Amino acid sequence: MSLGYGMLEIEKMGLPLLTTIHHPISFDRRIDLAAPPARRKKLSLRRWYGFLRMQAKVARRARTILTPSDTSARDIATDFGVDPARMETVLLGVDDAFVPPTVARVPGRILAMASADAPMKGIATLLEAFAKLRTERDVELLLVTKPEPGGRTERLIDSLGIGEHVTFVNGVSRDELVAVMGSAELACVPSLYEGFSLPTAELMACETPLVVSRAGAIPEVVGPDGECAIMVTPGDVGELELALPELIDDPERRARMGKAGRERVQRLFSWRAVAAATAAAYERTIRDYRAEHDGINGARGASKENTSADR
Image (cartoon, rainbow, N blue to C red):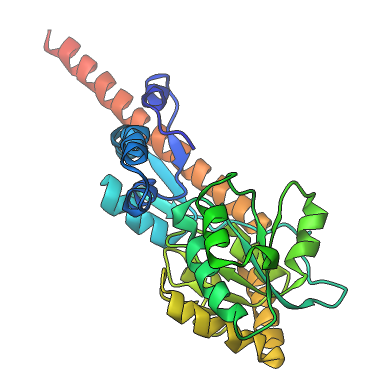
């Protein structure tokens, strides 16, 4: 999604402007700047996020905005100043390819899917909790991501001394990804913020039980605490360290939560429902735009007739 000034020209061309905003990138900015990079890096980040004012202005002028969660809609209203009446939540869908595994899961395997070097994804919190867990249990961590060579994630893994127990997976096909997601006994989503978190829903479709951060829209995706996922405070290493073994040590609970997750996905996250809701939003926007412009043109026509009559 790009909220450039050029989008404002669309309505001038006679077309209504509808756009989708996943979440206000102001959250990314705050989290990135709160991380402890070098001063030069922080200045670079401030320049990079210089487009935020433009995004907010364009968002306020859009006729209709679709968002993937009520949380995202609320945050867009707060940070971008968009009228909530012009926003509509349309959940994301999960492909039918994401299914439960047909082979046994790997004992002690924990999985996470996130951009390893993006502070917002909370991977540092997971690595620290995992390092403490490794002192008590024979567990391994699979990260579906490609870390920056020599970046913060690789440096943290080295400093924690867990390099031989952490594996990175990337560049795989969708079928291979589904197999990886179904290979873990549990998965963790430690993000500090999410506008939806599609990987979370995909993991649920694979019947993989979860430990997740109570952050952004993640609670909307997973439902009540303990049903499909255990929720922890974002960024809290201690809470995460305690929550992970709760599932590792309880196979019956893992199975129950996994099945509940898949049932929730099948009930709520259908691409057919997403397509229908999106099409309906476009139709309403076009209809309202035409009604508004027909009314304006009608008023102008009446005004001209009255002027002619007065003459």
